[in-house]
Length: 273
DNA sequence: GCATTACCCTGAAAGC
DNA sequence: TGCTTTCAGGGTAATG
Image 1 (cartoon, chains in turn green, blue, brown):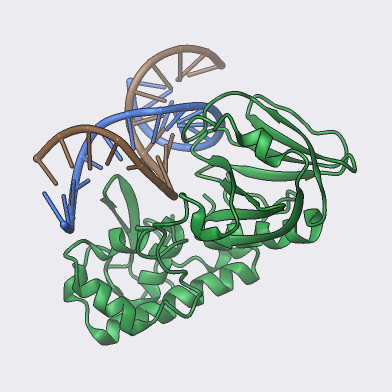
Image 2: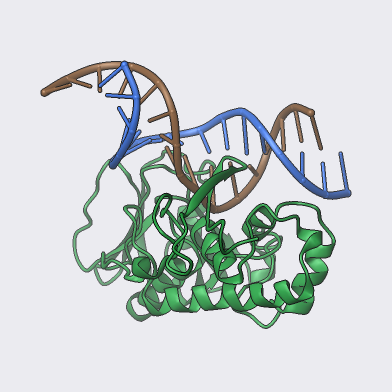
């Protein structure tokens, strides 16, 4: 399940590989992803040159010249694979973007929760998929002052708040569970009852788990691989995620799981209150 | 207006 | 063993 660190890892790898290439041909499966593909998609990409790649939340943003953007969201099971030569088309290959030098990028997504979109635009602000995204947890806007005021304004569970991309863009289930463990905050805590001190701990915890995961090229599960197919190495740093019934490495208590909004939350009842 | 739930989808794992 | 059921979850529309 690609979250910010996995997307960042892919962006860094892609940046080295495909910037400067010109799109020559687009082949699509025709199957809908999260929503049906826009008819204009191939037309926007064809003939344009990639001038840069960046990340916004969990989106891969490919800057094209002249004046266009290609957005990739991996959803749950999306992969972007680089092929120096012939692409390997399977029944889950939904797009092959071929470049003028014969290489290609392949978008593969068994569960089809991802998204591919392309827009003619001069600025990121014009991209509808990005306009409502919240603050980047590694950016300067994600401060304890801002977080505390945002928490004060809502009575939701802190877990749901942290997962809300319109508040903070890029966190998913793994890193929310991990960050709450490091901040010693129970996932079912109500936002407006979290203290300033806890908000500060949470900011540091979020940054810490994300930075470490990026340094390790992401956390590998069955659905994630970087653009060259190499796995990430962050799994050994996980303290609670998918560790139900195992011992807490801090207090030796038992890791528990609860369901919040159809999603599993893993936590340590001894450490998190 | 805010918070919660249902749904999309397929593969893996669990259950029988 | 092999078939059927359940579960996983990002994002969003629908519902409460």
